[in-house]
Length: 271
Image 1: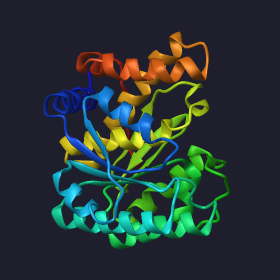
Image 2: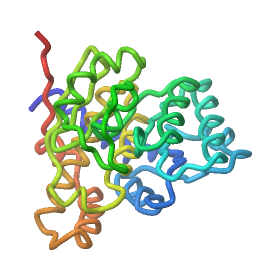
Image 3: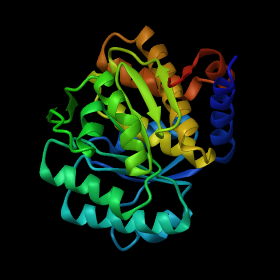
């Protein structure tokens, strides 16, 4: 059993023991499901968006999750205010640049958050991540039209440029800070048919980062946990409706020992 498998189990055990508060400024579409995913994992979610309370709320949190899926000017201001406060307090910030590359508002907001706050992890699909590099990524709505391989080529350099860790999710997940690269296998073909699975993965990265100060291992172990739960849910689901319910159950029922045995994380060694 690898050290990374043991680390995944250790992180899950720590979440369930400490129940970290995860402050989410996230989108309307996924808010309820994201909260339920965090509860099933063992964390404690709060969805606080008001600009006049986010600084106070983030001070209590173990991590801040910023998701740009349904933006308004007021929410952008709240995200930047919360992010600056979290940065000052040394709290992990996880950014989900939903649909970045599709519209100017989304792309510029994601870049503003990266510029004005200290983001620990950016979790997105290949197209969203590539849009942050300004490489003319092709994004259709909020779906990825770039392959994970396309993103992997640019990911290391982009992570170094941005000074952050990138977690690129797809059929295979890649986590890199530009120096270390981890590959995570898992998930199920039904995951793209349920809205909020990517956003939930981002929230879980927040929960794992709240107990693990290393953004690379926090992101990789969170994605391994989510991927294994997705596999288990998919094995018994009849379609997207039952899958989303079985996924919550799988997240709740997965033990640290199950995770250590079942997660598939490997290190990519660069020549």
